[in-house]
Amino acid sequence: MAKANPAGFAPLYHYYFEAIFRFVHRKVGSMDDAGDITSMAFMKAIANIGKYEDRGFPFSSWLYRIASNEVVMYFRKQKKDQVIRIDLKKANLLVNEIDEDEEKEKLLHQLTLTLKDMPEEIQTLIEYRFFDLLSFKEIGGILNINEDAAKRRVYRAVDKLRQGMKGGQA
Amino acid sequence: MKKYKIDPKRGEELSDKEISKYKDFGRLMTNYNEHKIKMHQPLYKKPKFFLALLLILLVIYLIAESSRKQANFEEIQPTEIQKP
Image: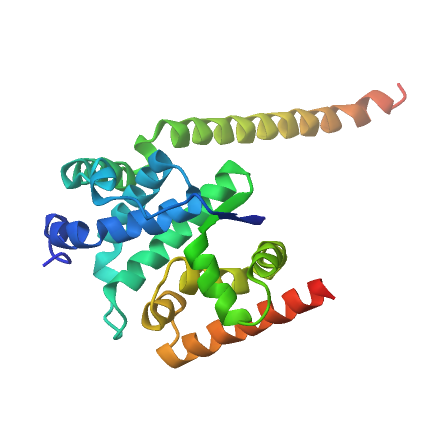
């Protein structure tokens, strides 16, 4: 229905708006900018809904991909560094995945230092999984790979981060 | 470049109420329709395109005019060198 008539997109908009807004807000930090970027992402989604193909991924992953591109464009235009504020709960979740035995405080400090020097692909995978709390299926949908491949990539990224953190500690 | 900061004060995620201020499908559709009209406007109706076209034509005209003058000048020159 949304493919035939843009106004038919309303139920999808109402269903996914909050999730996409939160996703964007975590990356840009400002409510107003998150509002503008989310609106632009939905406008692009409406304009391109005709090209959307159901490949077994959640519809949300298509919207996350559009929103992600909008965030990249926003920072390119602004020409400023992207500061990602991670809440402690999520940071602990990632730190537990990396090392359960090491002292948490030390690991948290090391995490922020190491993550900023990691390649963009690793940063993105870590963000999607641990800060945005996306499912492997959703990550697969964003990256256009299957769920298992997404899982492998995420854990490879965690491994790289772990190695980086160990290297930093030495 | 990305920077990461762990924010211990950062509590729960934004509430739906806070987000709902930015949720307006009617406005989104208005913006979408305006954007769509702009996108589908023929190129020649866009003022910027029209000015750029005018500028290109002017440059072409000036180049053509100067090369025509140059050709005339070269045609005249040999007669001036001839001895009486």
